[in-house]
Image (cartoon, rainbow, N blue to C red):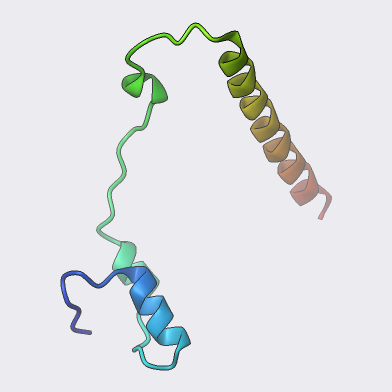
Length: 78
């Protein structure tokens, strides 16, 4: 499949849904994708000092952990 350099996967999916695009293999598109380690601490430059911001962040972490635990529990029950 010949692609233009600016064509994205989303563009290809939209064309496919519209009946204009060619079928493509998602595994082929993703095989050369490399991920690096991500650590939020690498991007923090200063301390805000705002306790409300810290509380909100901790709340986000708590909700995410609860969702993960719930999903794992649901899978075990199936």
